[in-house]
Image 1 (cartoon, rainbow, N blue to C red):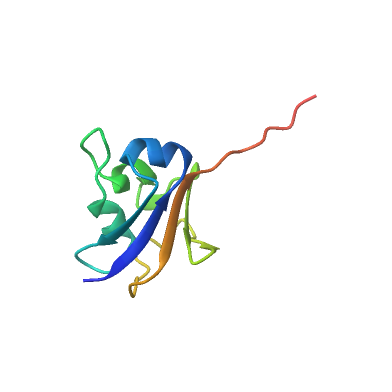
Image 2: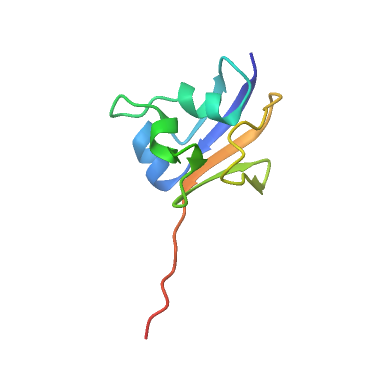
Length: 95
């Protein structure tokens, strides 16, 4: 059972109720990690961050400093990784 350090920033921190936590979870993929983290509303972080089997465009998952591509939820975690979850802020052009 892998153990990773999950760092939740901004909106994700408000949803899960912690900013940093060591998490051991069943399975070994990013999707299984997200599924194992409960939100304050009783769902899972997977339900918040994933839509149609892809990471939603308004959220990011960063593993050891590298952004996870939206279609790589089945990426295996070995244990010991730092996994950062956060909402993405988009700037709109205006005038």
